[in-house]
Image 1 (tube, rainbow, N blue to C red):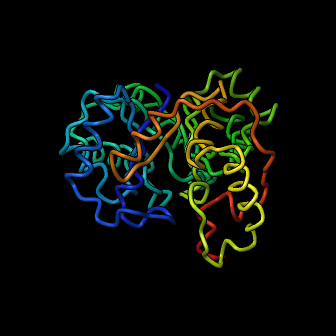
Image 2: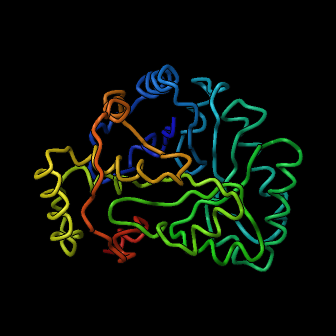
Image 3: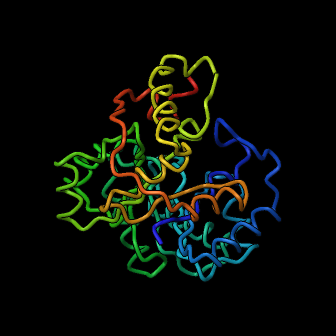
Length: 283
C-alpha cells in the first residue's frame, strides 16, 4: 500500500483545522494498531514532532518501516558526532536497532561549509546498518537540482497536492528517475486547508482559489479529502503518500476510498507563501 502513517499530528499544535486537541497515548496506540491491521507498513516521524518517537517506541513498531529525521544542527562543529548521537537517541526512543530511512530535516544544514562531512556521516550510518536508506525532506522539490550536484539521496520527501504541482516538472522527474530516488509525498491536504473551508484572515488572499476547489468538489459530488487524496494517488511516480490522522476514522476514510477521478481542476499555485506552511507564521 502506498499510504504511510505520518506522525506530525502526534504534536497537538500541528494543523490549521485540528479536530482532536487531546490526542492522547491510547489514541495513538489504537491508530498504530489499526494501520498495522490494514497493511500500512511505513511510519514517518521526526525528532521535531514532540514525543512522537518516544510514543512509537512505547507502542512497539518493530514490524514497521520507520523513517525519521535528524534535528537541525546546533553548530558546524563535530558534525559526525552530532548526527550520530542524534540518530542513536532516536533509535533509543523508538526502541529499534535499525530504521528504514534517515532524512535530513533542515536543508540549511547542507548549505554550510561542512556539507561533505554531513553527507559522509549519513553514509557512515547507512554503512554501519543503522538505516537502510538516507535522504532529505524538502519544502521545494526544485532544491533537488542543487543537491544532486554533490549527493544522490535514496529518498526525498516533498510536498505535493492539487495546488502544489512543482513535482510535475520534466527536468525534476528526469533527475529522480535517472537516479532511482524514492518519492515520499507529504502535505497532500495542505495541513487541512484542502479538506475544509478556513476563514482565517491570513488565507484571505487565496480565497478565490480555495472557493474554486470546493466548488469543483461539490459539482463533481466528491468529498474534498477524497479528491485531494486521489489527485496524489493518480501520480504513478510516487512511492509513498504520508497521511497524518488524529483518529482511526480519519485514516479509515482514506483506506476506503473507491471513487475514481480522471480529470482534476487546473488549480496550480506557485505562491510559496501559501505552499510552504513554514511561511504562515508571517502572514
